[in-house]
Each structure stands twice: as C-alpha cells, then as structure tokens.
Length: 456
Image (cartoon, rainbow, N blue to C red):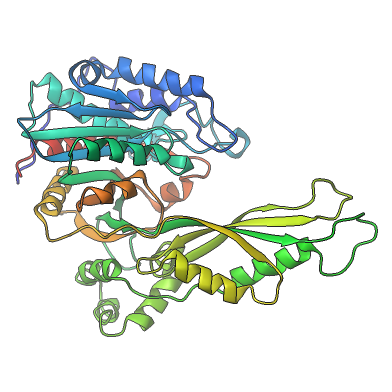
C-alpha cells in the first residue's frame, strides 16, 4: 500500500494546533459529579464551525448523550473503516496545573509549537487529526473506495455506554467494520529500556475493566466510645491486604507477540532474555513486572483501591465503610476467577464483596490480516525520514476504550494514537500539565489520510 500524499496546510488559515486549542477551551468534563451540558453543546457548535465540509457533506446521527456518528459514503458499503475518538475529558483542578487547563495555549516548546490543556492527548488531539484529514480530503473532492464511519464519543471517560448504543445501531444496519481505529498506544522512544528508535505501540486488545465494591458493616455509635474491629478498621485491613498481594504475573499471547517484535531490536543480553519468553514465560514476566509500571500492568491483573467512604460525620462511628477497587483484568483472566481470588484474599476480615461490575477482556484482534497490514502501512506516513522507520509493535492496552464494544462486530479493532508521547506526556494523561506537539498533529493528519485514502 502506498499512503496517499496530503496537501500542505493552508498558510492563510488557522493551523491544526489552533483548531485544537479552540476545542480544548470547551470544558467537556465528563465525571459522575461534573458535567456541564452547555459546554458539550459549545464543543459541537465550535466543531461544526471549524470543519464545515465534514458537517455539510457527511451524514450525521447525534446520540442522546452527544456522541457524533458520521457516515462518509464510499463507492461500496463493503469492508468499511471506523475512525474513533472522544471529546469528553476528565476533571482538571486548576490549582494543580502550571497553566489554565482549559486555556488551550499554543506556545513554543522544545521542538516547536505545543498545545497545552486537558484533552490535548486524551483525546481531542486525535479527534482533530481525524477531522482535519477528512476535511482536506473532502476539499480535494476525494470519494473513498469504501464507506468511512467517524465516531466522536461524548462519555468515554464514564465507561462509554453510548458507544455500545452506536454498535447496536451499526449492527442493525448490517455494518461489519473491516478496520476500527481508536485511541490507545502512541509513538514512543522508551517502550523498553535499551530499545532505540521510535516504536508505534498498537494495542490489539485491552484489559477488562471491572469495579469491585467492598463493604464492611458495623454497629455505629458515638466516636467517643469505639469498639475494636470496627467497620473502617476491617476495611483498612482489606485495603492493605489487596495492596500487599498483587495478582500473579504471566505472558498472554499478545504480550508474547510484542516481545517477539522488540527482541529483534534489543541489545544483548536483553535480546537473549526476551527470546526465551515463549520457553520460560514466568521468569520473563517477572522481569517485565520490575521494569516499569506500564510493563508490570501488561503482565498481570492490576487492583487499585480508588474510592473510600465511611461515616457521614467526624464524631460518628461508621455503620458501613465502603471501598471501590478498580481492577484491570489481564488477557486470559475473567470476573469469575477474580471473585474467587478476592474471596480467598479477604477471608477472615468480615468484609463483603457487594458487587463486581464491568467487562472481561475483549477478543484479541488479528495481526495476520489485510487490515493490520493496511494500518502498518499507514503508520509509515508518520515518519518524516522513512529510511529510519517506525517500528510497529502490537501490545496490550492497559486502559479501557470505547472500541471494546466494536469487537462484537469486527475482528480488526486497533488502538493507536498517531502522536509522539514522551514519558512525561504519558504521565500527564488524567494528571496535570497535559500537552501535545503541534508537529505531531500534522503527522497524525497524514496517518488518518493514509488510512482513508491509501491503497488497500
């Protein structure tokens, strides 16, 4: 496949970075106790103004929460492509940031202009790259060979229930996507210690996302006359036990595929260690668990206590103490096995597993298909010096995405954001001081243009 070359951006118009900055200024925060619908309306109105051809020439269905599903009719309905991103973001407490998280400032950075603000990486940056690619292709009069669907979600940060409705809608229409592209991995230069050059980390699967609700019950009463072993104390012991007893490590097939690729580029002796992964999976998994928090999360189910609650007043003993354990299930693990492990772990503490809510890991997408080859070829459009190349590495996405619902109607679901993300940038996702390099926004446009217009 030869990626379609794209025109240079209009020097007289606003840049991709400036358009992203406008959309960052829309405070589309999506959280259980924070959501301003007026800001979501403002985003959609701003988006329509910035990308008029996309809105005028494509068919649009708007879902109740605000997700946007565009259809760009091609010469055939067969083997369509779905390009996904979401425009809701997580909260951004201003006092934790160096700049206003919703200012969308465009300033000089180490390698040129950068855009600051919540959502620049997760996930308005990718959304703008998709929209920009489509807008430019429409300006060229391009008609895609196959239908192209664009889904811009409005509730991904609160479990993305509307994406499930979109999949129901597409399934009812008989749509079976040939390739689905959503957020996920990125272009990195530090995938593993010792690995040189850029790697495009493309997730072929994501971990299952599950919340375990724990409750310890007590008699309550006045805090001046506490009894030992109250609800909060028993829950605290449970939290410590969870922290001190992580799930066992292991190497799933997608992780083994990742190691097969990176081992070829690793220096000795790391190359020798990784080449033993299929013969000695447990020792290699234990090594990866110590390398970084990212590689550790790839090789085991993770459990993190994220929410705690107890008494409603400082001088009242809790009649109920509660905790939420956010669990990311490794490929090959499931909720039934999780319940069994948690029951054994909490034995003797008088702490109840009230409920387990969420999803098991979705199916793994293929890397031996024409859709995967097409994606790999499109990634070449990101590289300004093709002789250097960007290594394409399949891996397991540790976070959840809206694309997990699409595995019901497609076996080509891939999770990749076509942006360079340093360690500091990756750490800023869902944390303070998020920013994106404007140069990589333009490269992202080239990637999506190749996905849509490149030869299959």
